[in-house]
Image 1 (cartoon, rainbow, N blue to C red):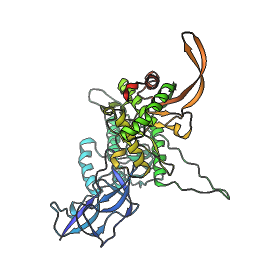
Image 2: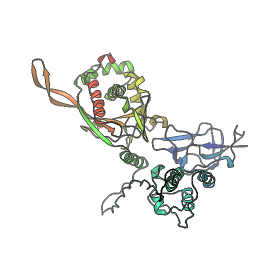
Image 3: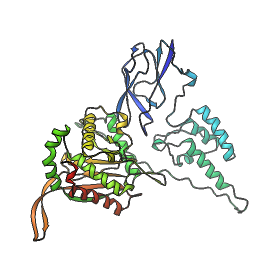
Image 4: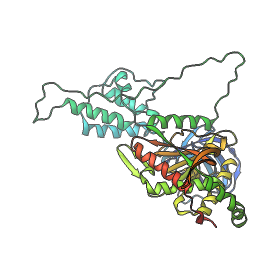
Length: 448
């Protein structure tokens, strides 16, 4: 008999953890190869984890509603034959969310600290986590050994998840404080100068609301909470600014109307407006590649591939953004097939983790709900998102060689939200104008 450790598999770029939502098998149950054992949920998509061997489930290590890290052991399966690389319990490193195991980390910290500074003196003040800030045992231990008070620790800017102070943050703070206090030999300094720590931005506190008689309390579901957190963080991260353009899509409308039946008969796919809008966005991204970027500290990472996200409304009212990878390599037929496939699988709940990872720019069609336009929030770590509004018949001034006249045209609004940290108003405006130009001067040879 051998024991196989079932671990949380990698689920794509930027996904480091998942919540176990439901175990489909219980201890003592037999499992077949590739049989689903449990359901998991990330901040992007729900999925399941299949069995990688046949055998009997003998131990569950991560219970329902608990969070597991990628690579962490979820369960133990007893098999008839020992796995090729059986791992013992001693080899299983149960990962903390961001910190190393305390005993091992303290030893590592001691070695690093000796290279940085001399100890400042142990403090007897007890360091505690607060409601708005969590401190790991390792950080508390370092703070006490270095004489860092609770108030001083609260001022250290954290780079970890939700602003958490990591081991690196506190060591950097100690190093800067000590270097400032020790004068250089060539520059006489009469009094040690201590650098002021960078204060973390104040976190807004929600005002408690007491429901009144007759009012209904509706708890947010898990996805709703994640979307709320993601949108709030995006507004705190990027300097949002918008540019608006009105576009005349009369010719585009008539062209689509003339080919949509032929398109469906030949390709077996509906030709909606979404792939047409995506085609225009791709042309604009090629013309203005800085919009196909991410910001990393003080660096700009300009992406080589164009992975286009499309915001999709789900039946429960939530929103998900599946991604068309290498969208610039697809023709109009390929874009239409990809859009229809992802839309259907999103609404049926059949998306895989890789389907919602790695987007470099996002398109959202608020016109589907009758909105004239909207000011969308950037989907981090991207730097731009385009909202397309509803197409309406409106009176418009039409210029001709024989003079101007009023006619009925089909028009829509485009709203481009972009990150003003790296995209200036001129570039952000020219980008959305390029999208409008492609739509107004539609290339009818794209499908005949």
